[in-house]
Amino acid sequence: MAVDIVPEMLESIKNEFQKKIINDPDIKALTKKLREGNADYEDANAYAVKVGELLSKTFGQKIKIDLLPDGRMYFNIADRVVGTMLDNMYKLSADYSQKVQSDINKKNGYGLAGISGKVDPDRKRNFIDKISDSEEFADVDWMLGESVVNYSQAAVSDTIKANAEFQANAGVKGTIERILAPGCCAWCEKLAGTYSYPDVPAEVYMKHKDCGCELIYTPKANNGNKRIVWSKR
Image (cartoon, rainbow, N blue to C red):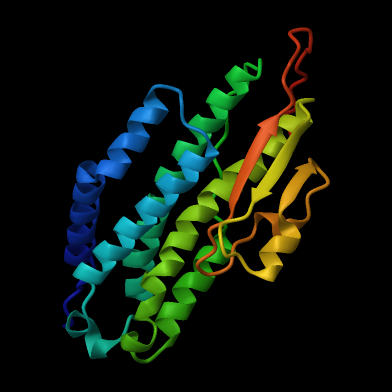
């Protein structure tokens, strides 16, 4: 009977990832800033990038070709190991962004708590399919690099999009700004700028490989007289 390698591999990855998170100086500084209520979406993106880099490094250390049956990342392994860790990483980045949004709301005069982005099941499935479809893990191991960082950054974009929609339904006007990273491509240059929600093209929330662009959502400041109308939608 074939030995199930998933439990031991997953536990090893979880422990190493957690150790990296606890000991990383950048994570410590960003977490302190969040705890003090001084973090913004630039910090949320930096946190997401760092978390993604730490998970990517952990994958590189703990997932070896000689540990995989036939040198292949079968779907069952990819889903249970990589998929589980992508979920864990996503939650860390989304939760950070949620707290950032709550603090932004408070500073702008709203008592609305931020909400967290949700994993796109299609995005996750496509990721798992790509690394499991290849007969040789060596041909797709690159996906556990920068693609993991992009996946983590998506948690920030998803949280921004979710909050913009939620708050618009509650009667709060806001803007979404896409800020170019140095040396960005022509595609990103066309998307840079400030948009009044809901007039935001879908592409504004998207990132390509190695994309360093950042998103910021800012609700219009409340003058103290605005009554928030809650929506259950």
